[in-house]
Image 1 (cartoon, one colour):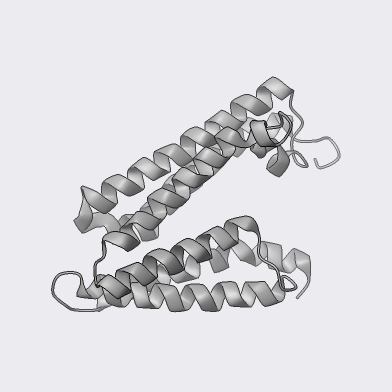
Image 2: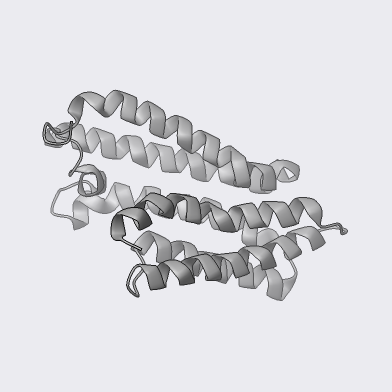
Length: 193
């Protein structure tokens, strides 16, 4: 599989473990957190299979973000299964989003004043340093919002947590991305248009 094809399917592969989790969560019967424990088992297995496949397809490497997802899924999924308590798996998404927010917020300190979002989107968009910094803070805000939403659904609106994790955050993300690229379309590099 060539790199272009792999880049095109990566976003879809990322959702497979969540879809497996949601399917098992919704179709498994049990009392208390039994269905979450079963779904977590499916999530762990699917995560290891998907990212194992990606590891091989990406020439025995994973991106930092992919490693973060795998490690946190294994750690929190493992804790969930070891203690038979769904509290730990519910921590995963808020922590991942908080780490992304923190990483972007701190990125100018570690990247010589360059915001992390510029490192990611620089090949596509042309902006002034001030605009890049503003965009970086928009993304920090987005990941902070996602962390807060994930925490609310995980610990306040628990009955809707699996649904939000599988679909709600995807909807919020798609809306954000569409709005983001709508506003950024005027900054697209001339050689890309």
